Image (cartoon, rainbow, N blue to C red; front, side, top):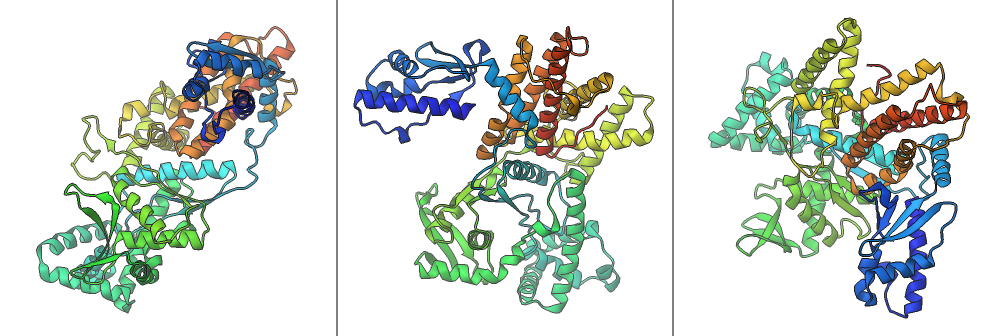
Length: 582
């Protein structure tokens, strides 16, 4: 619908520019249509007349009047009106709206058009450092990245998930050095929790004991050379860590699989080539043995260029080097058109530098789009970084256990006669849904406060509210003793609440396109919350099973079924399982 209106407006603009004999380039104009805040102002509104006022040297209202005169209404558009200082408001016809709903109803993809030329989109997300348990800090990247991967794949893009796990580097040298000094029994019989304790001890020793630090660095060199003892220990670390990560991905309902892993170690052999390329292009500077790149676009507080360190004095490589190698791989091997890095906002400067350097050093082509999908922090109610009761980093498994316990208590309080088995099964779904939705419903670029009471509430913009709204629709069909597939009556929108709900359902395909383009899953959450609210208003105002006639009953049941279809599809795209009863 929106695209049709934009085309109509663009054609009118071409005629107007030709009539005024100006040199205005239409390609430089962005014809944007917005939803009016007041529905009485129409379905879509454009402020293009205000944009054109200066170049055309005319009042916005005069320009708007001329554009309206050049556009004609048809079976799709009921009215085109001038409002305020120069807004052009469009009201779609009910017949056209009903056609759009029929299309979405019959479409397996809820009206999403087939993309003629799908792009290859690489999404780098989750990417935990190994040899320790995943914690709450890994939550946002994991679920935001997964939602975007689902949405882009649903849109028809060729999505390649990349789990750039941290399985290489100094921390493994520390661990090997520490374990090498331990008793034989402790070396052979350890789990991931033990490993995390070993790392904490090794890190303290690394910072306090120069001799131990030298030993750790030496083990890193041996590991890079595939020393049998070092490599065997490293593989044990990795195996324990990956099993832990995969169990959490499955619990969270995240699509990442072992085949999606492209670890830091995978780029180890390519790192010398990265240095050689930078050297051959004259970009490398040697500062007392440390190899750096200085880009004039990035200036520090001292007005001097900021360094991008790519190799340390001891020959070791850094994150920047690995990221450049990864970009080259994603360009040459994966042939990515677009790469999304779902990493927290504190890495903003790092990615700005890496993206700029990768282009300048020709590791990628100018057409390859690189995006840092940044996100804020998770805070407690006091506005501080979210931590455990003991003041440490909250392990992700502990967070999910707590969510499940709280969800079970909530379910029993509302359904005291429910069996323990049913309660636990429902608690698993609701707890994960609540945690994920509480995160995804916030603008990812903002910090947000983690609040158990809010996220598990059945009121407001929460997962329990949306899940319950959907179960109401399933209950309606149980009472009707019908399946949605049995409904053959075409949509007939008459009451105001029917029209409002229908209009909201009809924009779902365009909403998905916006979310995919902007990488903003919170817009989908807002849409679903508004959908649930509009359905509730429709349900209260329009009798369904007791409708005045069969055609009205069938149409309203069909509207309810389509609402459920969109709710379930939207929640699935967010990685949230739905329920048929609560």
